[in-house]
Amino acid sequence: MRIFCVANQKGGVGKTTTTVNLAAGLAQVGQRVLVVDLDPQGNATMGSGVDKRQLTLSVYDVLLESASIAEARQSSPKGGYAVIGANRELAGAEVELVRLEHREKRLRRALEAVRSDYDFVLIDCPPSLSLLTLNGLCAAHGVVVPMQCEYFALEGLSDLVNTIKQVHANLNSDLQIIGLLRVMFDPRITLQQQVSEQLKAHFGDKVFNTVIPRNVRLAEAPSYGQPGVTFDPASKGALAFVEFAKEMVQRLG
Ligand code: ADP
Ligand code: MG
Image 1: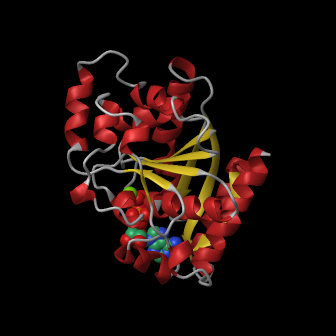
Image 2: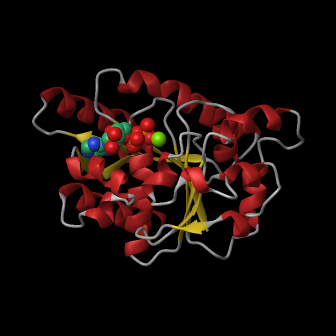
């Protein structure tokens, strides 16, 4: 079982879209996948077709050890993978966790119990470097960083890279950046091409080969409670995410 965080401390950069579509893509190529929603906004939950307003058990209960993953998981009806849901209740976990022991290792411990059930676990992180994100980073083998090829993209990255280095040094020596994923890419925009080249020059093979195009079908899919990969399998966005799933499987050999 390989565990990955999809993280970037900026909001609206495509973390959730990457999480649910990579999950559906991996499922499509035969992998057993669990998505963990660590964002109180619950977008990965809703986008997987699980109603965040009707969760009896969620990642909140898992973090506070009042439920196991086996008890809290549900299946994404269309996505072909399992989900641990989140909703606003999770925002309170931050405060409650602070006074508990091993507060940053709660998710890691919970996942140990389902080690033989999945090939991939994908953790959708909130747009912050909070205790929730720290739980994700402590549990993971690697981080996938979705980013838009815009002017300030590189600048924002240094905080995340520093946090990953610190977690690697102090809490989880397995952790590494698996790669940067260029998302919402529009090749007609010269600036995006330039930033994309800069990324490759700077990060080399840490930049995934697959590029996710800007594609409206990916943005429409969540309101139908499913990932773009299953909502419109022939769309450019869906095809790119299936390609990305294959690249991930290949890279991890
Ligand atoms: P985050 O989880 O980082 O906040 P989201 O995945 O929710 O980001 O994406 C932010 C917005 O951009 C959403 O409305 C989403 O539907 C849209 N979006 C994400 N990726 C794409 C894409 N490749 N093409 C078009 N729209 C996208
Ligand atoms: Mg999100």
